[in-house]
Amino acid sequence: MSGSSARSAYRRARAVVASAAALAAAAVGLWTGLGEGSAHAAGAVPSPDHVVVVVFENHAYSQVIGSSNAPYINSLKAGGANLTQSYAETHPSQPNYFALFSGSTQGITDDSCYTPGFSSARNLASEQIAAGRTWASYNETLPSQGSTTCSSGTYARKHNPWFGFSNVPTSTAKTFAQFPTDYSTLPQMSFVVPNLCSDMHDCSVSTGDTWLKNNLGAYATWAKTHNSLLVVTFDEDNRLSGNKIPTVFYGQPVAAGSSSSTTYNHYDLLRTLEDTQGLTTHAGNAASAQDITGIWAS
Image 1 (cartoon, rainbow, N blue to C red):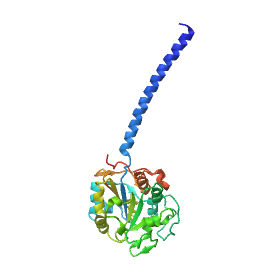
Image 2: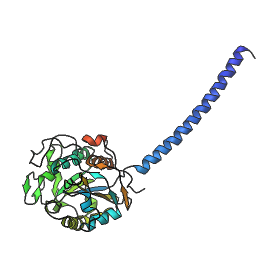
Image 3: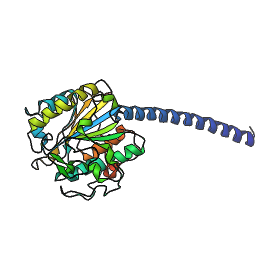
Image 4: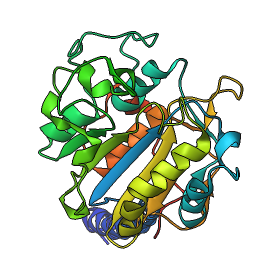
């Protein structure tokens, strides 16, 4: 064989080997990619049609979960999912609400009355609206839709962070009386904030638990068969338990009887809420937070 023929044969042989190697690599890559995709899909945050988040007040995990004073919340836990290591960010109440809603306390350090619309920072509602999705809050004992009053009877604006943002229309803050009875007309994302008695701040755990059953029990039942989600959480603990709080998920996307012992906080919950909506942005510290996983139905 001439030198040129030998070199040509050598090149052809190298090409065959390279092609085979490329095919093998592609096969491995495809297999790995499929594995990663399957793993991602299995642990992905679901896409509920409606999400309702209810925030209660100032009770530690051990005061609610497993307590005979909260039979309804514990029934949601049994039929849904429980986070055993869920934590608030700080004390007192108001900065925690801002953290949960916007991924930051926005410089709020106490419960004093802030100036409405003082911040233009990104938040769950502004992201939802910017994405063309629907949002509302339902605030028990709010004097009227969109009212920015600081307090009125058992109503307290310190538990309603949406009023702090210029990019959230005040008209999206509704009274709880406006919570629809036809749940299919609910916004895709909404928050429910009970008043100072119903939220366990001034009244007992039993009072709040009964309020939840009477006012959102029908929604919870409906959510179980209508691809919807109820989240029950607390702003902070009683200052005696390291800020460990109850957080329970219930609805069709949730694996019944599941739980997670991963440590989560308000920023992780916000991140998860954003991701249930398919949002491409994340507010504040939610950008570096983790999704809540291990509790979703397959």
